[in-house]
Image (cartoon, rainbow, N blue to C red; front, side, top):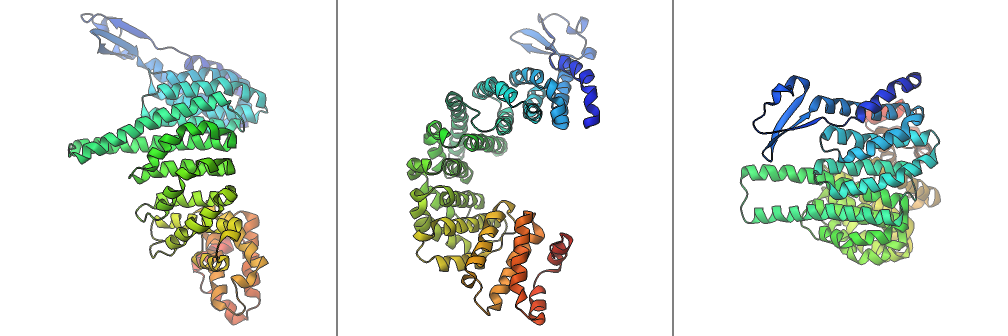
Length: 487
């Protein structure tokens, strides 16, 4: 599909809207009645015994409805602005389907389609229409989430909300809507916390057999996905509302502190990620809440058993340094920085999943040096330790800040990292720069700056030394650099 299909939409969309609007055919029969006499299975009728009666539903019609909803989402996604004439009517149809309990596929297709239709509405230049549609839609999301009992659909609904809010943008929610949404999140997360404690108690009492354990593992996996989507939804609100969301978020604090105190690393990680967002998007306005999460973040940095937990904690220290201001500077420089450096120096720092935590820690150290240097006892020594621990070659998100900082340091104070005549330092710089350029997608302007930095460092060497250093770069990295046109 594409622009060539757009002229067909006036023909295609009305039948789809009609099919997507169909209501289910239902029948209620006495126990002694024969369904096949009037409601043939060949016509799609299925019956079940409910409360002493036979209740039937025609499933073929539901499949048609589901297919129509899916197609509406597909057309909106693929055609963008060309879908604009049908966007408002489609949204009016889709959102009530969040509570269409007769067919899970219909609900899932509706939740997936809504963000695509909003994008079509916005790409067509109708920003006012987006805002107008969003107000009641936001309320419907919240009501659906408060009432939703199906964890599988709840996580899809949270994901849909996050995507939709990102489309609408800044200031999309009123204070009342943010309060209502936080209440929905609190309800959901409190339910998951209660289930987690029940499972812990059952295991501690040895009341779990193999079948129970399998069922609990499935529940934990599903709830883990749902918890992640709640965090992403809160992240979306923080990103679009900043400090205005902080007063409403206060209602989540008791529950977030509960999660922060759990033994389960995944529970603590959820809480730390939420507090990371609080600091990143509200800045100094987050300081009144800091006493409840600073010590747990340091403890997480030191937890050798949970790389993802350390990664979340390291990210949090980085945003404290970058966005938290003076309220966090002493903590970052005096308490968190030593823990970061100790973890980076661990022999297993780059083994397996540890590498992502370590690279987030390197980013956090760079931010501490950049924004909290006056509070650091010996910033030059920390800078050199940080440089020796590079490169960043796995976590693409951390590359821009880390390497822009590296470029600025070498330009402004080259002797701090590259003492005159120190071939080892130059060799390390070449490897540190070449590796991410070879294996990651580095932003073009930064890539050119890094290539220039590498060439400048090599320019003073004779041809023999130059060739010797270049030979330390693995052949596959050399080929990658050449194929990207960086050499």
